[in-house]
Length: 323
Image (cartoon, rainbow, N blue to C red):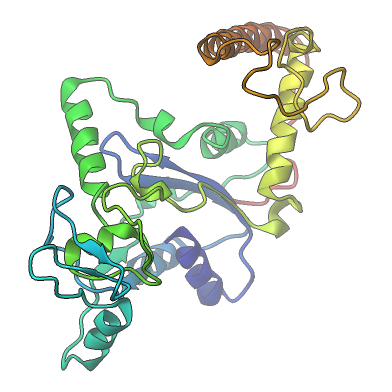
């Protein structure tokens, strides 16, 4: 939806909008985005484009389940399709379900997603060198290096219950045309095959760490900085190494396989290899190393911040006309 909004904004203003931003989750687990845009766009136009931005999902209906996870349709090898476990009648194929939508007298989409509301108070210009410039850029980019669910950690029993209800609902909703959950709604997934288990789809939409959000969390136009998301991740790793000044490199498992010439050699191991400790011990060591790295990074950042306060600052918004 965010990219749809940017596309509509580009058509409305008549020039190629350059943008950078990230998506976060609010405490109520609704997606929320922060964007910086180069150029000057009227607030009224931003609101109009937002109100006109929507996406229709033309899928078979999935508001009422026909089967349950405990009693799903079964695979019939002789028919090479899924059938009702009692009547042995085959379920509608994906092509038949789509044809039914097209042949309806008044077809309606299964779901309509709208962009939502843009607070006009949050639309403001940013000029380089101003008092709010650095703070605004930090506010927009603070979620770039964080995991999605880290934004909305549960802090109460009510929030935990809400997250559990959302995850339980997402576990049985279809995420794509090939999702096994279509079996619960009396429809065979596209390219159905033996072995599909509804309620156990491995798609990102069903996982707790994404909670229904499967799009790109970091959205940056190539013209913004001539960098891709992989480039930004590499910059993040370089920043961590610079802050730590090589302190982490002395610990085990600190050097990754993307560093040529490292003193580590990676090779496959056999289950009976006597040099490999039990997996329980390896897990505990990994957890301990991650905690140690976070503590060292926090301490290094504190030292860096203390030192930077006594030296001149360089603006991160140099060349930024407006956002």
